[in-house]
Amino acid sequence: MNKTIKHIRAALILGTAALASGLLQAAPDTPPAAPTAEKKTEPATLVKQMETAYDEIKTQLNGIHDRPTADAAAARLKNAKTALSAIGTSLNQTMLTSGEKQQLLDISSNIGRLLIQNKTILESNEYYGSDELRAAMQAFVTPMKKNASGAYIMP
Image 1 (cartoon, rainbow, N blue to C red):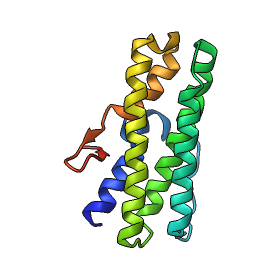
Image 2: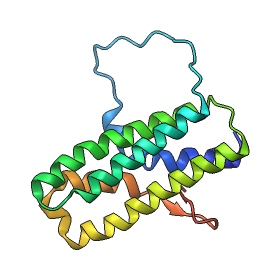
Image 3: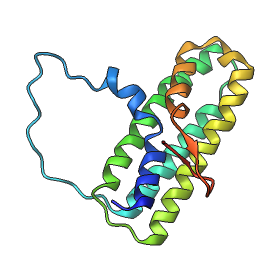
């Protein structure tokens, strides 16, 4: 996997490792999933999915103004993070042109900047008293770093 794909994928995942330990464990009596054929996603679909995730994150963050809206946004932000993780997985199975890679990197960087900017605002408002929102934002931004090109990536 080339370096650009790694940066895009890392920017998309935005902290999956922080959530993985608690959320991705199967129940003890759950049988292992049957192997499935790999599905390849078209690059245009990945771009559209990322744009949709960005719009959802932006809408949720812009709608927070009190505890109930903060709690509601937290649940939707967790869903957006799950969607971004799935997109990151699809990137491993998709051949991208340099233009598509750049487009995906731009969107993922915009998502990172949006999260970082809003985290500062939310912190100054003490997350409107929502521990759920604090945890959702922490999971998104804690492992992110800004690289020399301005993209937010996982270390």
